[in-house]
Length: 196
Image 1 (cartoon, rainbow, N blue to C red):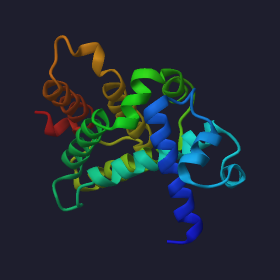
Image 2: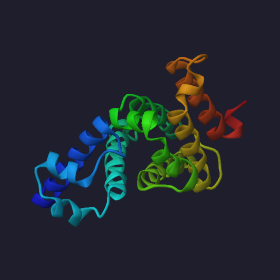
Image 3: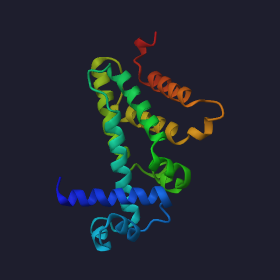
Image 4: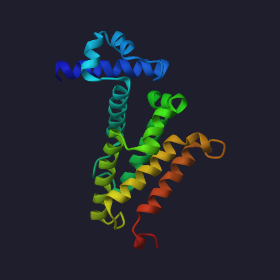
C-alpha cells in the first residue's frame, strides 16, 4: 500500500472516530486532521469539505461490509446466495457503530441517499446485486427481466429494512424481520415455474 493510501486511510479512520463520537455536524476537517496527526492542508488536499470526506468514509465502510458478506459463487444457487448476502449485509449494518450513528442522529445525511440520489456505495451494491441476478438468470434461479430493474428493487427493499428497523421493533424481532426480507426477495426474484 502506498504512503498516500495509508495517509488517506488514517484520515478516514480519524473521521470515523470523530463522527462516531461527536456526529457529522460537530466534526470539522480540523478535528479530523488533529486526530489523524496530519496538517489541515493535507486533509484539504484530499477532501475540500466534510461532506466529501463523509461520502468517501461511508463508501469505504459499506464496501467493506459488502465484501465481508459475500458468499462464494458455488455456495448456493444465485437467488439463495443473493438473499443470504442481503440479510447478512442488513444484519451487519444494524451492528455497525458508524451506520448506527447516522440512523440515530444524522438522518438528514442519510435522507440524501434515501430520497434524492444514489451514492457511490449504493452504486457498488447495485453492481454486486446485478451480477448475482445475472448469475441467477443463467442458473434458472432468478426470473427473467431487466437485471438493472430487478437490482434496483432489491436494493430499495434491503435499504428500507436496514434503515426502518425501529418502525417494526414493537412487533417483529430482528430475526423475523430478516426472515420477512428473505421471503419478500425470494418471492420477487423466483421464476414463476418455481413458485408452483
